[in-house]
Length: 150
Image 1 (cartoon, rainbow, N blue to C red):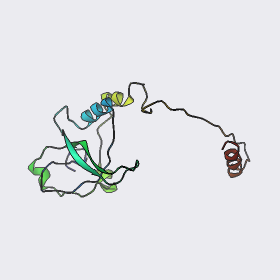
Image 2: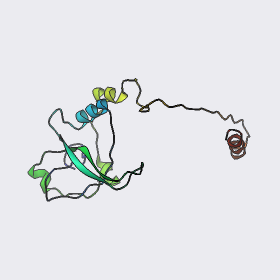
Image 3: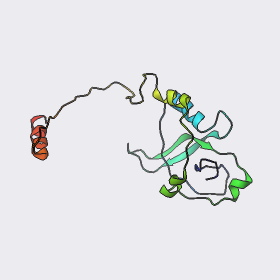
Image 4: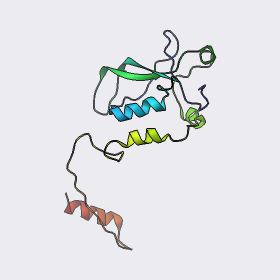
């Protein structure tokens, strides 16, 4: 946790440290460009490297190994002298002080459709509305609504 933001850093040095537990995300090119800015790759603060990761648990039931890009902080003696933590905890996160929002990152994350929430492909949706009046029993109304629209 050495940077001024107290963000955790990963150093690529064989033989030291811990195996990390984390998450793998599939991102589009704009989001990847935003991550590169956020992680300081463009400015030389961090560097990106392809790594092989073991997937042990997945919301999609995947397991095995896959290649992913990971961000690394350049090795230096000051960082190597600090305690190495096996996992980023809530206590560590409370120390984190992010930089102000970067407009370029925000715009890249908006996507080409001018909003941040979108599906990778079009999908049909159905919207239903339940109107409750003052004094209505919410559980009774929800049950009747669910039975009617099942």
